[in-house]
Length: 334
Image (cartoon, rainbow, N blue to C red; front, side):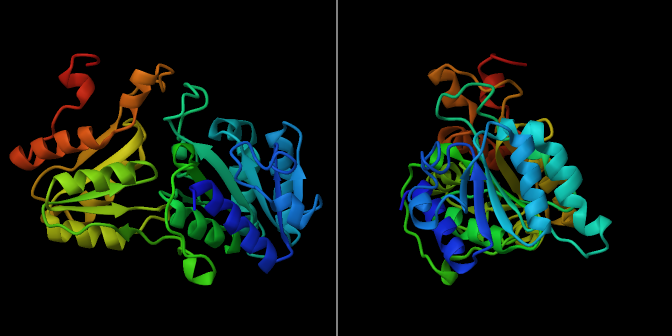
């Protein structure tokens, strides 16, 4: 399946399993989603369960919070992650806090899907990942698929969860194909990372569309153990710490700028809990601290690609020092 088809399949399977699952979002019904991630769902489940909304993220996110508190399992689609900004109050102040404020009487089993990331020419206002808007909010879970299987499996796990889950979907992957195991055996549990390659030179932790680049880099650099984090909150500390204990080195590969990036949390935990295992300082391979460019040439360099990972990791393994990123090496930015 393509990733977008795996998402539609996951939604359909959950809607067949549980009549409380319903979909809300802009252009998701008649148009079958701006990225065709709800293809065929209106025809099968009808307009009561697959609902087109106005361009009003604040309104339909709030409606989903109320519906979830009353026993429904709404799945809302945020066309671009940036559009969630106008609905953060409903998500982080209301949905994430209901269970705590009600002493456990009310959960909010809602799922928020949002497309994220660079690579398709949507420019600086529609190409950010912005996971750091969410990761410091107790009560929220945050997941990021990296292929068709995780797109299917994580989404199904998110919909079944009893608390709010945000699924951040790298839109550059929507058209990518991969084998997908459907049904209950295809569900990917929340909070479990996946070790994709084995090695003993360095642990490389990637997320979303950087996972594929990291795996390709490992094919060119023997000894890299690549971990797909998959769930950002709560992230799988056990898998990462065990890997670092074997390899002695940690590398994170992040699409977002270094400032406030999720890799800083990984580095902090590893240095606190596995400091004596480290043979070198942790390396974060990130995007530059600039807006996502519109120019195709510049945008192609924004997200760390296989070549940049290979270059930085090779220098890192050779010297055990932190290498300069491409924009410093080439004198573009300080």
